[in-house]
Length: 181
Image (cartoon, rainbow, N blue to C red; front, side, top):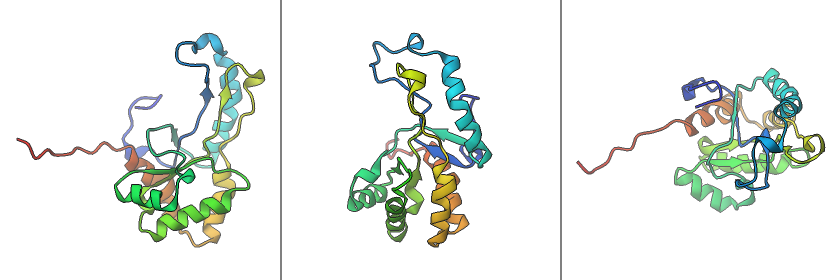
C-alpha cells in the first residue's frame, strides 16, 4: 500500500528504501499532529522529493528489512543474505562512498547482489526543532554513488537491479505452501 493507493511491486520503478520525511522521537504516547505543523513539514520536505524525482526516483519506503546492515560484518551480511534476508546498506553519504562500494563488491562477489537494498536514510524533519532541524536530501546516491559504481565496473543492468528490481522483489508478497493438508 502506498500513500496513493496500492501498486504492484513491478510498477515501483527506481526505489530507495529506509528514507524518512518526518521523525519525532518523543515517544508514541506523546507524539501527534500537535507536535508539528503539517504545512511546514511539506514546505521543508517537498523540494527534496521533487529534486530526487527529477533524477528518476519513483518510490521510497521505510520497511522491515535488515537496515543499517553496513554496521554488521561481511560474514554476517553474507550469511543473512544467504538465508534470504534483505540487506539494506543505509546512510550512504559524502565521505563514505568507497566503503559502500566495498560492501556492494563483497555482496556481488558472494553471488548475493540480488539481496541488497540501498538508501541515504535521509530526510528527518525533526518535530520540535527549529525549522524542522537539518534536512538531508536524497541525491547523493544519484549524483555521486552511481557514477562511482559505474567507474568500478557495475553495469547499468546491475544498477537497475539495485534500484528497481531488488526493491520490487523485497516488497512482493510470496505465498509459502504448507506441507500440512
